[in-house]
Image 1: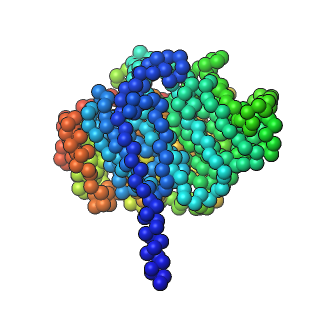
Image 2: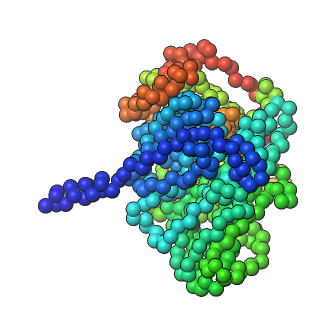
Image 3: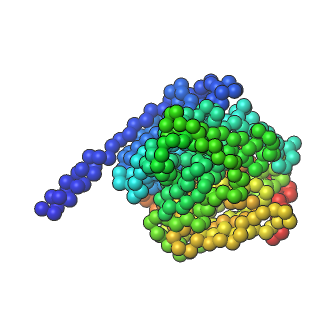
Length: 552
Ligand SMILES: [Cu+2]
């Protein structure tokens, strides 16, 4: 009888899980996204912005990507762990070869997580030119109760294509920091000044999902006159954390609960600020301000509230948050010390680095190297130093202590994992009076987990994760001009349990064929050879002068 009931339960759970099929013809679209400049964007099925994708935990999301661009492209589902399917993660020359023009590739995502994610291009920085949208995965039984949802996506939009900006910042003639062009803000896909009102009904509770899909800008969101209760950070549920406003570095997501007032006699505004600290502050351009109506009743007047200085408001502090699952800090097996910086290289360029290694792509995707080099896959040299490889043992707990002894903040993203945020502190290298840095704060009880963390300037952050997801995973800055292989190259590669990977995963034939079509070898070391023979791999620039750092 019990068995029978169990069988029925399993049957009904399977019956509920469905295949969500999304067809994307990735195309160039010419349009005026910001309401000001007519330019080429990358969209799907002739549309830009790309509509959000909705699914439920347990579903399989089938994303058919037909590349109709004239260069290769790939797709990354940001925040999904891709357990057992590292080859579905997307980054070009790490997890796959780019999908050649005219070709189709089907991404298959088994949705084991619920929360707020996004989908974006991970080749040629197509994300920054519009190939990005929200991915909302509902939970069948969400632990938090609410009456309805609102979704906000934030994007930045520039007059020129991303490649123009990347060339500008990495040009040998550029001083450091390089000049930047300013962007415009897009909210839910359109000019931030033309955003539609969101509706509130008295006493109801709303879950508001916030996603910063920008290539460059930070976003700040608040609804003056309402407290925001943060319950989700990057797809991980937290205990309620009450704030006035939420700040999102590029690639971050939050969900907040907001309970509407008892009366509908007044309407309110939500307020949005976009800002980037490495772009000079200028009136009306950086920061930019946007607002929209929180409409209780159409004819109600808007409650005018005085502007409050940001410093007087409370904002999200992830180190003070606790994870809803109450998982204590993982016991560390291995600590890695990383520092971020910018060096002058022999090409005359000033490029970013992690531990003095500036990332250059290999000739074979690193995952393919890990899958095809047998025992050598455990030797980091097989991936070549240019990819900044670190090989992790299966199930070891890794702590990253990431120092940012620089003027600018970097939002660092780890693929394949959510990591515990356990400590912030001052990184005094390069510190001069007048600069601000993080005080020492630790999370010792149930640290929040997330997949992007902002390393504040002149500060360090400690994060922990268990290497329980065999695969190859990038770790990079999510400001596109910093953290892409086509710009300042602040990336590194974690090769996780290659021995287990080889036994448990198989590369799809189509991906191997796509490499061949682009003249890329799908096996062997970083140069496409056997053993550690790197013949044929072009040399990378050498360091002419290192960024100032007292410990060196
Ligand atoms: Cu950065």
